[in-house]
Image (tube, rainbow, N blue to C red; front, side, top):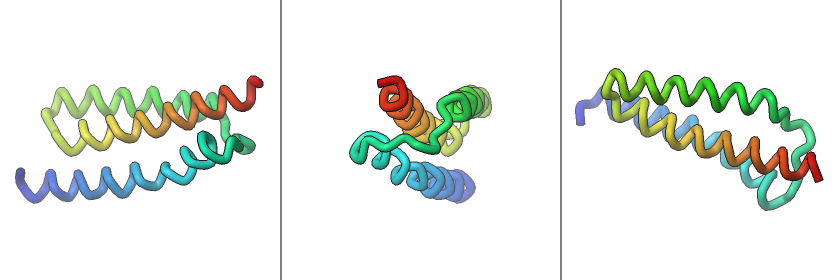
Length: 86
């Protein structure tokens, strides 16, 4: 792995870890006020496109970061949707 991909992996890790408090708030605290499901859905589509780009560019950093970010965003969106629709 070259150092450029290492920077990308570190950036991806930091970016993804920033979503953890929101995931915890939705799934553990069962609070979803202020979470816009449509906004998180758009973010999920954007991340899926970035993931596709990562595969096309064969970039481990882009692929890894976007897989984990997509999982976090979907956890937030689905959790918020469950809370808000009940």
